[in-house]
Length: 570
Image (cartoon, rainbow, N blue to C red; front, side, top):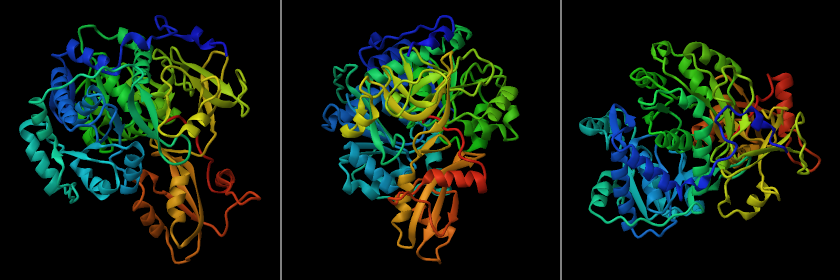
């Protein structure tokens, strides 16, 4: 397809970027550490961390990891919320020549076990609140080294008090036994006395294994090279130039990092892009705690606020939201799930900043398209392809459809993954012969190059921006002897965008909704547990016995409420 979208680019935004600007993602990070050494890089719970602090501590942790005898390319898992330890660890793992494997800290033991086995991680850095999950599976995984950190480890004099409160007053640390685990602070102290060996890295080296289910099925690792991540940072950087140009040159940019760093959206947009701009990130460890998040936001004048629709919505519904000073807010970037028009319009009214909606996936580092940062009205599209990015709308036979016709959104660009870790067949299925990645989403491109998502090709459910795969939930339900058969779909939800709904045919008539949720909670992260459960005598099937999820969605729309809402990338 002719790149019709280039005519819509804002002035000053180039059609192409050059990932070769850096030899690796590490070079990009080290340039930032050196250039902005005296600036504040992160703020967390009132504690300030300079670029120099992150530089120094990440070198120390990198040296300690190398001292463990780990070979270049070893996978290192990081399992914690947004804390300064995470910011240090990302840089440390990459600088040591290893591969970052981000882990959702809310994972159950079975979910964690699968990911650690699949990636072959030999070390993990985990917040002690979630160490019990690691302890439950460590003997069945390749893990050789465990580093345990506590929330207050880097928070100065108040740190020990915070650690005591978290463990003994709030009782947020389940008992665990990891006798060989090393405290994070000890690893740092030892690393400072060790020699760090700088590996020679290239853009073709693996930087991240970002786990995703794609559109269905078991979680798999998207292989993101240094080239992919560097490219997406540069693409987003030039796309946001119009907003950055309006910011006073002598004032440091201040961004909110409420998106989890274990999610590729948060890692690229909040962490890496803010560092490259020499900005400061406000780390929000638990954005679900809306009152605490608002208390933090009230302390600062924010310039950028990337978030998902549900967080924007939840914040605005809190009575103290109006006490936040948004007079300096230049950019509100919405992604991870569809931004709802009502939320976007209310956000603009209350903050004066329009939400700029983008689209992407874990497999694309993540951003593929974005609306113009200069637009002041919400248009319901996912915007234009970023520089060096091609979007092609194709039918089931891989034929390009052109504008105005619905088809699968396919993407090609330097941010697209190298493939799925140890899954050549799935990689082959996901990529076209001419190098386009099949997103699994169906969209329509207009004659200006703006794309609107109209349907979902597969059955993935988006709960507050996180993927839920029906097969995974169905496997848990079907494994119970009291359940004959089941099916899972997504239905609209005012608070989370979509909610998980399970249709269940019982074998044991005594099973209740409460029983079924308990079954799921034992094996699934909370957002995957069905919010709605409907008991049926039978489920619709094809002649060969395949359950028809689409018919369930249609029946929900006709007799039980509206059909599933508009999808978006992860």
